[in-house]
Length: 485
Ligand SMILES: NC(=O)C1=CN([C@@H]2O[C@H](COP(=O)(O)OP(=O)(O)OC[C@H]3O[C@@H](n4cnc5c(N)ncnc54)[C@H](O)[C@@H]3O)[C@@H](O)[C@H]2O)C=CC1
Ligand SMILES: O=C(O)/C=C/C=C(\O)C(=O)O
Image (cartoon, rainbow, N blue to C red):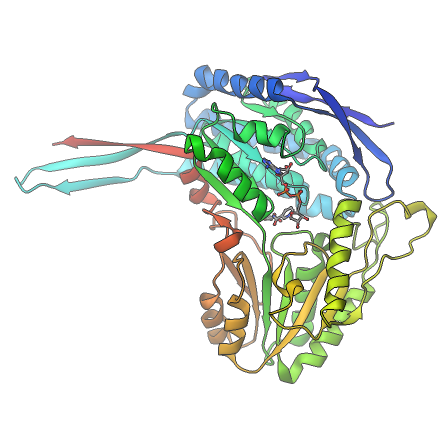
């Protein structure tokens, strides 16, 4: 039976102005009726968050906040299977992926930011004055306030907790708007955060869409003190415009058109495995996924054929089948978008090595939003499909002749999120990685995370960095105190 998901405001479940249907991308069946928050519900959620800040939560010492974060992490693990099941229902991703990536990271996010805040020091300077006296400057971090958290559907719980954990660690209250495609785990997290002992109003959930819906009502609300957002670059621009009149800070992690650079001296087997993971993980629906692969000409055919073989070997299927490697795209709408890019690649002159069609997975899955993993060659950086983010299981392979050319081609993009360099020459690995105009560059690996390191992008890929102390900087406002000694 389909679930009914309500908004969560000040610890209370609140109905919306109407409901919308959440559809299972595996087979097109109904997952839930979701209550869409109108302006009144969003307003109540912002007020509940403000009231929480004005209450004991606003004065909670660091030890109390870290203890809360650790209890939330424990509780996520106690309800691990509930979270995994909810994430799988919303996204259709394989169960093992939801467990190993999404839910495991959610607990890790809370623990990591508990550690960070527990050990964070103060910025302080002893200033020499011309008189020979000194002054002590120290910056007291204070919560930013009511933080609007807006997240997408690809890694719903992982990305939500990546923002909620540091926000709470720093003493903020949040109003979160999960994607309309993935409303379940954000709602479940409200239960867990309450069970862990957070005061009512510290974590609020409003459901709905972007324009003319909960997303816009939240970002234009004068009661919020900042917005943290992950999603498409165009949405980031719309949110910037929405917050501009009230001049609120934003932290944006946006799209990518990420490059891999494969040198002839790479370890071919490991590179192909790593490359395949970087293109196809989560059906290509990770902002970090590789969509452009630049390959040194002498190994081009070997790499192209090797990647195509690995793509063809992926097993599309039901999430509960342990053999399934690859789930559906999130929705029929998104499948249309990805399919239109594959069609465009052909129109632009690509040679499709594998994939390119909607697979026939039998009548049970016919209503799902499936697409074949796709690899093509024959296009250069002038093609639209090599410039625009597809956000699906697709990659374009392009040859290069020199290291300088590889760097130039990889950096020839309006985005700047992530890159991966594959070579056994580590000196070259460092050199090339450092020249990438991106927020994150990997060498001989991909999507290997240390949660303390800066995460974010340049250009169309975002504004600011989150992770470890970088998150603390966004989620706090310092007051500098200067005392003449
Ligand atoms: N991290 C990334 O790079 C991601 C990129 N995408 C790309 O974005 C495309 C669209 O996917 P969506 O989930 O619809 O991404 P989106 O950026 O439109 O939505 C992300 C979140 O923002 C909200 N939102 C949308 N418009 C808004 C507005 N004007 N004001 C406030 N909130 C707003 C959505 O309801 C959702 O919660 C995908 O096809 C994909 O190409 C999607 C998800 C993640
Ligand atoms: O924090 C991570 O490990 C992953 C982040 C991925 C995204 O931001 C995305 O896919 O949008």
